[in-house]
Image (tube, rainbow, N blue to C red; front, top):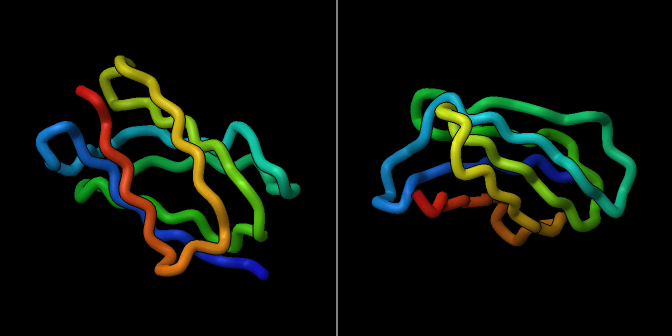
Length: 86
């Protein structure tokens, strides 16, 4: 089963984080090298992911506070919200 994920990256205050770089660095299912940037509203999209567990590396636009997030596919609602600790 393939699923597309819509994500939102926010800071500690809940404000969207634009121009952050996200990349899948680990997966239990084969995926192409996937990297993307958040748009001006902090949104990002991961298209056609197979079922499995994934680790997403998040790098804020200023290069500080890199973090990783684990998530699974399928997701009940197809949404992934990530909050940075900065």
